[in-house]
Each structure stands twice: as structure tokens, then as C-alpha cells.
Image (cartoon, rainbow, N blue to C red; front, side, top):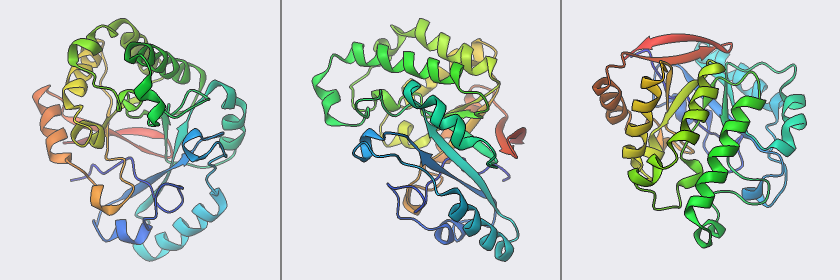
Length: 258
């Protein structure tokens, strides 16, 4: 089993207290952690969530000497247009194996904050999918678009609701295709937030448009969600005839059979 979890967080992210060592105990294979980068982080009180790259690299280098180089470097970029220059400046000169691109907020609030409950769901969806497309188009160098449903997790979105936004979703997928990025199947979204049917729809749409690159990530913030429901997600991909996952080393894509 050469494929591994491409979306993990450790104590180097403010919303996780998990250690590298505990993840390493879960597997003899590779791991990669994708720590948060969110400027003006609404979920964190508006302060900048910035990965301490030097400390992160030192920790990985030390553990890799012990564990045979099993840890790869990753980051999850939370994009807002206002933070574009800061994001590009931060990434410059730093080495990552994989860069995840996400939209967590609109510059005022995070899409998981309770204010969402008071808003028109269709307006939230329209804004969120538009911001996702803008993020993919504007930021060069990202490898994976993560949890397309992050902005609608608090909403009771049906499959029919999502289909109303097919034109916007196609714009997003076209942008992902143009950048040769992988589409993430976020297994916590699918099976904890019960959005598997939404992902099934998006997978079909992506394949119809010529998409081939899929990534699997649990979005684990502790070992309890590591490789969360991976067997179910793999079974779903196989239903669609997908035979491999796209993984990254030094930000170069390769296919790992499933």
C-alpha cells in the first residue's frame, strides 16, 4: 500500500496538539503533514497563523535521521485575496513536498463559525465557490485543492442544492485542471460531516471534464482521525474506475495505484 494520507496536522498547527511521533507509530510507511498558513485567521481571532518553518524543518530533519526519511514536508495555504502578497512572500524560498490550497474564510469570518447559521445558504455557497475559483486561479504552485465543501459544512446542503451551482463548480474544476492540481477527497468531510454524496457528484463531474488527479486526505488533527474511512473512499473511487492516487514529492506528481 504505497498511498498515504496527504492531509495531516500536528502541534505545528494551532488547532492540533498531535505529535509527529504518534503519527509515525501508526504506520511503517511515509507520512506528510500539511500545517496551516492563514493570514488574518478569522478562526483564530484574526491573528496570523504562520507555520514556524525553521522549527518545523528542524523537527522533521531530526526525526528523519531516526526513521529513515519517512516524513515529507507540507503546508495547507488558506487563501484570501487580501493575503495574496503575504502568502507568496512566505512560500518563496521554502521547500515543501506538497502544497494544499484551501479557502477557510472570506476575510471577515471563517465558514465554520456560527455566523453562517444566520445567513442565506445559497448566498454562502455562491460566495464560497467564487472564492475557491479565484484562489486556484490566482495562486501558482499549489498541488492539491482541499475540501471543496469546507464552506458549506455548516449548511444542510442537498445534492439538488449543489446541482444548482454546477456552472460555478465547473469553473472551479476547470481552474483546477488548468493548474494540473489534484482534487482532494477529504474523508472527514465525506464521513464525519456526511457529505459523501456531494463528493460522489463532484467526482463524476470532474471525471466527465477530463480530470484524473485525486488525492486522499483525512484532515486529521489527531491520530484518532488518521486515515479516516480511507477504505470507503478508495471503494468509491474504484466504483468510478479510478485506479490510482496522485501524490507529491518535491511538488512533483506521481501516481500510486490503489
